[in-house]
Image (cartoon, rainbow, N blue to C red; front, side, top):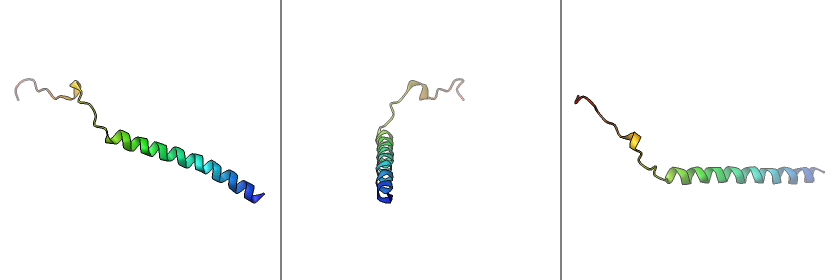
Length: 49
């Protein structure tokens, strides 16, 4: 009975650990990509200060 419970818990933890690793790798991949420059990011000074 205890062995069955341990196997059930370990199977559930494998799914959680796999999902966590997938999210971590996705964040690393997205963080390594350089964002495209946008036209709104340019700073324009008006008035010649």
